[in-house]
Length: 427
Ligand SMILES: Cc1cc2nc3c(=O)[nH]c(=O)nc-3n(C[C@H](O)[C@H](O)[C@H](O)COP(=O)(O)OP(=O)(O)OC[C@H]3O[C@@H](n4cnc5c(N)ncnc54)[C@H](O)[C@@H]3O)c2cc1C
Image (cartoon, rainbow, N blue to C red; front, side, top):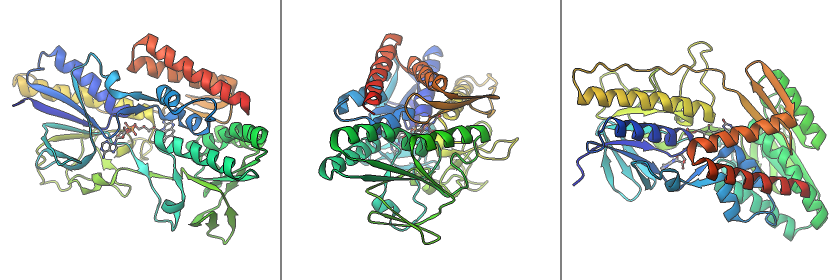
């Protein structure tokens, strides 16, 4: 029987993968592999690079197979863990019991853990809008992107004529998807005589609400130039089959409706005895530790949380940190450090742990807006155009370098570039 203490990282996305890799390396360096085991658990056996999902959803079936698209945007997690001492478990987490110190998998297996890291990301939030969950396609995962592509393609094949795509939510994912559909539009027009009308619906007064005003202006102009119909200040009250109904009584008909308008943390977090907010996100302290529901509650496992699953209030702005990959990765480093300190203190009572606190900062961001065009904010610098698009590619490459061998990273990156450039030419 394996009596090693378990450090369970739940979710192998941006944050979870980073925590697992750093921690496993630290445990090895401390020569504690006989005493501790790092587990990485995910319901999917693929690690998805989400910034490429808009390309996946809009790449023609004639340009790339499902296999090609998997290889460029959703990487085999087991292969990413080669030469590490991490045990990967492909399974869904059904329940987390911080008081008993155990997690339960979908097949009923229970695993006792000394440390738990919540890195479960987020899921679509439908805000109880009638008909939304029923008629909308979500846009969160690789499978969602493929479903969108297949749905659009199938409709185009079956009903040549004009097709109407409506996208609910004018945040960055909605903007990049709406803009990129122009590629598909060009091809559908050429091949099938099928026109494509894309409407982006946003309840705020502008798209990319909350981002720098200059970024909003650049993106809005670009969307207009591409011919995307931008409907701002429109609150969706109901979705019917093929129809969006607005609070003011207005209506838009659609053939495909895609929802990018909100996310929440997985529901299983709200069933744990830890503090959560109204979107199920775990509230964490400055060392990324989750807080017990009541001050007297004693948690058996030390629990940390990161990324889209948590809510961390920026001490300066007093606002929650946005759910972006960069934040999840920074938080992962803090958690890996703090768990290592706890392990060292547990193994050597004379060791005084030195814990780190998470210091949020303004993360740079890049928003692709159709073809070889992206707008970006890096510190005070604002970019818009081809240079932004090149930067986006370099960020992707540097992420690939950080998770796999350099040659493999370069091969995957070049393959993706070639697919997406060929797809764009069709537009
Ligand atoms: C379309 C799209 C585009 C995006 N573009 C960008 C971008 O350009 N730049 C950027 O910074 N951010 C972007 N984001 C946001 C970014 O992807 C998230 O902020 C980031 O993934 C959060 O990392 P995470 O580690 O918290 O969770 P994730 O990376 O989402 O990982 C969560 C993991 O948990 C697993 N999981 C969930 N529930 C369970 C369960 N019950 N059992 C087992 N496993 C489970 C999931 O399978 C997943 O692998 C984008 C998101 C989307 C959807």
